[in-house]
Image (cartoon, rainbow, N blue to C red; front, top):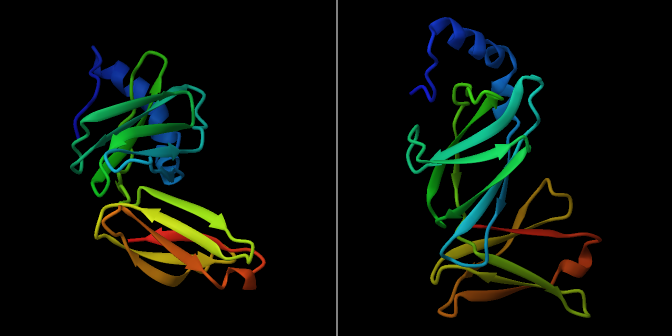
Amino acid sequence: MTKIHKSSSQCADEVLRQPFKWTGLAKFVASLLLLAVVSNTVSAANVTMAWNRSSDSAVAGYNLYYGGASGNYTNVVNAGSATNATISGLIPGATYYIAATTYVISGMESMFSGEITYTVPLVTGVQLRVTPARQFILTVTGPVGHTYDIMATPDLKTWTVIGTVTIGTSGSLTFTDTNAASFPRRYYRTRG
């Protein structure tokens, strides 16, 4: 790993790093929640990262580093003191490697956290509408020729594949869940 900032004295460096050794940066990274928010175009996507606030009162803010290769972070998003940040302009289908740091008011940063990977989903949009007969109609948009499983669950725990769709030349396909009326509540997602 490369050091982000060098201090003028080794002693000062150790003093400034000490809070980061005991504050649970590993806990900070372990608590990162990945919330994928994909835009409505095929050309770019976003992902929002959220985490628990550091318990160290010396922490002034957070930086998220990301790039297309493990350990090679070519971009940074400064979240300030917020506990979430959005990374935008991501390419659908690409894999990104993300690590975080905390920093103190002087700008000194902690070491990189453990790395997580995120592959941007190829699905660029899912719309849902309900018919008067309580049939749920999902319209899935994405790259032409790509196949997705349509999954459903009543409890957000056990997911079942209820159908498979392949995106046609229009860039979208409609799937109707004719069994939706049999469930008091039903959630959907795509996989593929």
